Amino acid sequence: MEQRTRIWSDIDYERNGKQVDWLHLPHSVTRSAYGMIDIPVAVVRNGEGPTALFTAGNHGDEYEGQVALCNLIRELSPETIRGRVIILPALNLPAVMAGTRVSPIDGGNLNRSFPGSPDGTVTQQIAHYVDSVLFPRADLFHDLHSGGGSLAYMPFASTHEGPDPAVNARGLAALRNFGAPVSLHWRQGADPRYSPGAAMRRGVPALGGEFGGGGSLNRTALAFLEEGLIRTLRFLGILPGGPPEPRPTRMFEVPDQACFVYAPDGGVFEPATAIGDSVRRGDLCGRIHYVDDPARPPTPCFFKRDGVVVCQRHPARCERGDCLAHLAIEVA
Image: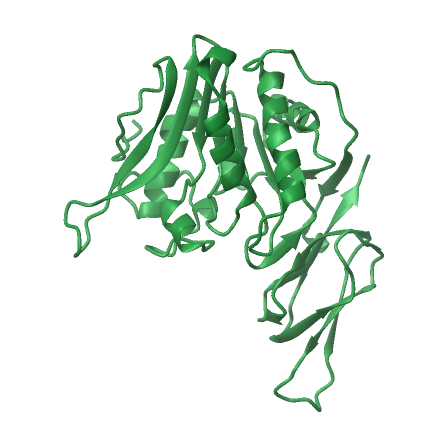
């Protein structure tokens, strides 16, 4: 039997209307014995119909989704929809408020914490609430990401490959409907620790995406992200007008680990390519310089397969094991 969450709220997911409130996560510390972490949540509902679940702030230093969902909360009204939209723009609130990828409270990476635990760390309790309370209510889940402070991305929407072909097909249909200029299919599979993998394990089609990075906010990506969310609500029948007209999208896949280049040593990374470049196996990805030992030659790093550079490390300083870049393969 599944344990009940310890997170509580005055939100009623079955009530018609628009509610903007908080999820209260008990957090007892020295300065506040009976304290709470208050995670913002909005529910817009009008009668029976499908449910869309949108989250951002899974990682706190990824901003396009946070802003897009705050805007959507203000814009949606129950009179214009059929069904329900559940929105959490700052899901990992401690990380969001700190502007960090992981929680400053427990060091937890929310997107490596599913299905979570009702009696675990703060991060594990958030994951458990999403997995046990929100996923069972959802017909489609979209978790909005970017590259955060350490990575810069070619903005794209994405979906993962899961074990259920029917769920995969619904996810791919939703991805194509989203209408991003670039779309990506993670062929490596849906890691069950990730939010999309957890949703798909419960039979919920899941979208993701990397809508920028570098610790900044990409205005172009924000614009097509906001439009894509509206297209998704029309696709589901939550907003009127029927499914929107298809848009051309460049479809990419990440088939395997050979798409990634990792630093073999620490130093200053000088990239040899830019995001969007096409490369071949053996092409130079970049060099690692040793400015504390200037007589030492830089170490070259090479791509291991053909592809398009969709991601690149943003800070120049790197350590051994840091991702320097990754490729995707254009398929359509």
